Length: 341
Image (cartoon, rainbow, N blue to C red; front, side, top):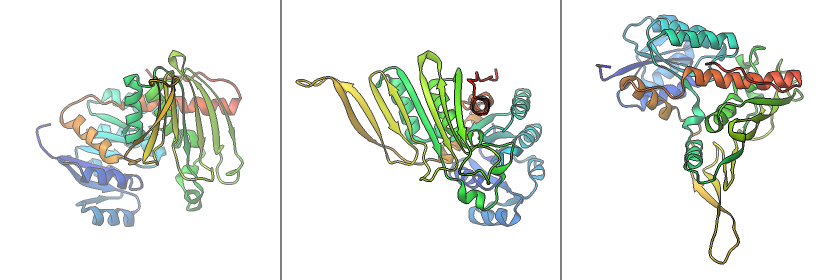
């Protein structure tokens, strides 16, 4: 781009406020506008972050020719419409996960992105979490040998969220696609696309709260002989966590996004000692919603015309794997995910 300043608008001020703060921290970016259907919320955030333009209708915001890019952090159900309209308006887009809630909506977004010359990035935030990034670097270095088993969990009690009334209880949505996509995407990022999944689910805690099951467990078969597990619960009675473990032929990594340390076990030989695994405690920055780091990459992609890593297909194929988990739990049979190509 010729101009130095990238004008950015944020749609939806729930998680969108965190994204807006990330824009404010990025040199060369201007938090040009914000939009939320709740005018009081929009005015409150505008005052706090010194945003000059406030909208309650995103269509009015994207009609501004001075706006270069938008961050879509609205409820999941709105992503398709907002993505398509924003691309048609010529805006670059960072879209919050999940990309969409149905295959039809994912297909429409993929098609719109392919027809556009704008940059499109999916906000798979776990790929920017310091501990997870460091774990992937250790794995890729070969320090723990070849991967054998991987697991991740999305444990998050939504009781208070639902008590306030929430768009998350829409029958089209479910805990695996809506929140568990974090854990599924993390394992896809590290081990590749699952080739087959077998899942089970229960609906005990939120039986009167949500129309969909609140707890899922899935066993997954990955490429190269790697197996794995995903646990998703939006009703568990515990602190929020995404504890993840990566087992290799020569070591193991235990890491989550809420702990200041991760543990790495390395199998080494020391003089006078038997061969055994030695635990190493590694300090990490928690920063489990690193929206600033994510946005800095988005900014760099646009300004310096770099390729997108978390592409529309990455976002869509995480949803494809999530949908396979839900289908397997509902049908009681193994399911092969149908990926987007």
